[in-house]
Amino acid sequence: MHLDNMHPKIDHLVINGTKTDNADLIADSFNNYFLNIANDLAIKLQDSPCSFEDYLPPSNLNSMGLTLTTPEEIMITGKNFKKTY
Image (tube, rainbow, N blue to C red):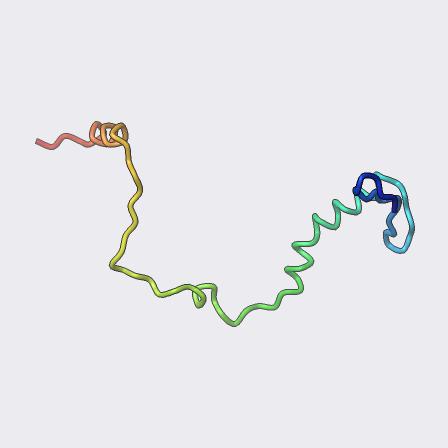
């Protein structure tokens, strides 16, 4: 490994027991690793006896959330009401 301006340069890697300096092979190996890592880890996970809901706090049925609106949104909504007179 060479150090140039504090940035390490990789001269070679050992891939499947074989030393290589082929940039395409190194890039493909990194791509395959990151492509498969999530699936490889998922296979190793055991099923949890708990549901994700077990980790959530109890629901508060007496609350609601509101978001801000604009005068334009109110005008558009009002225009879309069906007239019933």
